[in-house]
Length: 312
Image (cartoon, rainbow, N blue to C red):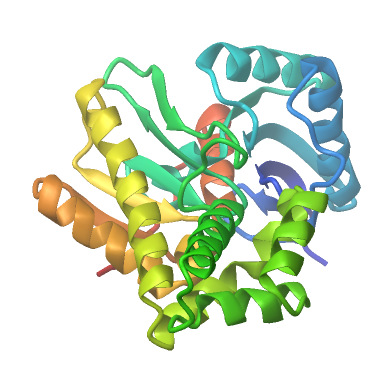
């Protein structure tokens, strides 16, 4: 039996699920687990640090000594917050630790030195690292008022569009029936009631596939909702470029972005139109690979070559 020895731990902590990966110094994956994020909160930092350390300890292989921990975390949305959380993690775990936003995992996961990372999943945000090493963020303000292109925001805008058409007497678009079926209600009034009575991302987000299915069936309203979400995500990239993000690469990921080709295609088209100097990639490796890469850098372990982007 091969001795485990020194290991590196990476975590991708999203709004819905957490992916924990533990690797040996030579790149062998020793633990690879996805579990719910329901108890995760990025504040207060001491509790968040204990949460991360406990997740690593649960999945540390027997005989393994953790040398470094890196996490990309939903809710870690300022450079100061990430730094505080990283210091707290180092203190709690007793090994070097670093925490960044989950979107900042995309560049290292793709094997790139730098990139603008865009996530569209349970939430949405864009993150980049300036040439001086500082983080810069755009979006990520939550699905109630923003997070355009995310699952709950797409459902929010689709419900608005469908009910607006219903008010106008229109019944020639399949979006409303698609949403009624997804929410298990039988009328526009029922749709309005269920989305308002349970205003929670976990209630709205799972219905997002209905919006894409409606678009595939010819819904002009659904298509407009998807395009608007993609345009908003592309706008966030433009904001980061204007604020000094020096990379010429954009890496997109997140549950909606990677599972719904229509959203990625509209996002890519908007960026190609507005920022032709940028190369757009869709991540095909779980972002947790970026967390392990950051842990590897933190420990000073040799870099392992990666090429986990899909050119589209």
